[in-house]
Image (cartoon, rainbow, N blue to C red; front, side, top):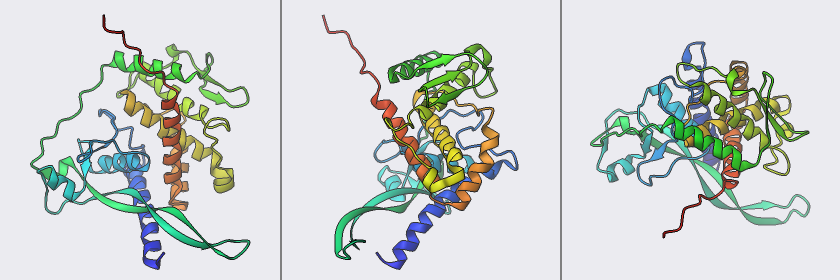
Length: 306
């Protein structure tokens, strides 16, 4: 591994972290996360060439870039991918950064014997992408918002299929690992906002706690204490925040900031500024959690043809 490639890896982490921090701080003192944009539907960013949704850190990075620059579309691609699609990136447009991982063969000395051992390792690489708002020759079509009744029904089914125990009562939402249950206030306690209905507020909170539910040893086994120390609790909260946002995007629910949200944001920014891989770790763990929850879903049952 050359010195230049080591520097390049550090630049990837720093560039993406800076991109996300800038989006959070863009509110001139009234910080908000990139998935709490008022009046806009939430969808996972999609690649123009493959049609696939971006994953993990790239979801957060592109939501952040879209917020700061005011893009209306969730479709992205590299310069060449846009050309392949028959479109052209306008001159002077600034790219946004996403990350892909490349596998390399490495040789490292064994710490006990000193002998060289070979293996494979993944290294982060940067890729520059442009939003559909930055190109000519492409007709932007915004996704149709999901029917609210259908979205809530799907969210309810999603939670039920996980098998998580959800109790109701009181004024607080939390997950209690020692007894392995989620506590939620009754639905009637939730109120709507300019961007979310009361029911969406309920399910957004429930999905946040459901991501916490995945963290225990027999599920996703998330442990942050060794690396993040006193910040471990805040990082777990960031994982739940990201995971809930990913799930809300998939289920067609507009997430609403939690009541305790503002108290965490400044802490998250401090953690990201101190460790430019922190948001990568949180996004990766959030993706792992949502994949775990998706794996618990029951297949749809269709009626046999007569």
